[in-house]
Structures are given as C-alpha cells and as structure tokens.
Image (cartoon, rainbow, N blue to C red; front, top):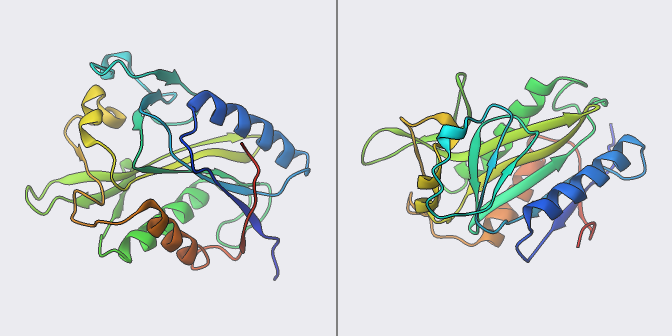
Length: 227
C-alpha cells in the first residue's frame, strides 16, 4: 500500500514556545480540514519549563527564573532548551497508518517510542520503555540507576496529534534542577553526551530519518511550513 509523504520542517533557529504552540494549533486545524498533510517539526527551544495537565505546582523550583508555560499536553513538568531535539508530531489518527490502527493512541505512542529506541541503538545507547512511567529510560553505567533520556507528551485534538517528543542530545542537565521532572524525584535525567556519545544535532537527525521507515511506511519530504 502506498502512503503519501509526511512533511518535515527543520527550524535552524531557537523557536519560542508561544510561537510553536500558535503554529501547531493552526496546522492541526488544517490537517483536520485536509488542507495540509501530516508533519514532523524538528526544532529547539530556548531554556524554559512546561507543565502538562498532571503537573503539580510544588514540583516547580525554578531558581533559574526561566519562563514557564502551562500546556494542554499530557504529563507533568519538563524542561526544554538548546541541545535537546524537539520533534512535534502532527498526524491524523483518524486514519490507519499500518504501524498503528486508527484512533489507537496507545499504539501510536508505542510506535513513536520504538522509533526513538531504534535511533538511540545506532549510537549504542539501549533505551527502554516502562509500563508505569512515560518516556524512555537508560541505566546509568556508574550508579546503575535508571535515568530518563527522552520525554514524551502528546495531545489529541479531534484525533489529530500534536506536541511530541524531547530527546536529550547535549542539553545543560543542571537546568533540570529547576523542576521535579515528570514528578519523579527518585529518578535522574541523562543525555547522549552524558553517556559518552559526542554527536551533532544534524547527525542525530540523520539517524532519526533513516530509522523512520523501520516503523512507518510513509516517506519523509522536507518543506518549509513554519517561520
């Protein structure tokens, strides 16, 4: 079965969080009305904290005085900043995607997680899912404790997905001290850099694109969609 391509937008400059939300809201409406195809938006944000619908105010410390934003995505507090690859995923879950059935949010999230797991494996990083915790986890080789390397927060609007994943490549991990990440004080946060993998954002993007077709039957096509 042939599927139409999914557009990729890659933003080279840091994108403010309010601008990202504004663009996504408009684009999701266009997908719903079948005016635009599905899209993956690759970007980075300046340092900031966002709260999902389950966030607790006492989990925000923010000694750095970074901007904070309350969102309608799932999950709790998370950090975004340079060195973290954000991928906002705008897909129409009303349709069967072969990798997951229509209107099956759990299968959709599972497929997205598998995509990132395959990508990290190419760098000899073995990330895993946890049934009781969202995101992807690795074992710290020194402490032997679990640490999060990728966060995931998805919002559905009339079965169109938005928000997405945040993969830690080389962010400033000290910035995570401004929150209790995802409300889980007993677990740490890590990055590819902390695990000894020195690579550029473009190198990780290339592997993400290569691994896409191991999960999804859609080809990817770069196009400027957002400023």
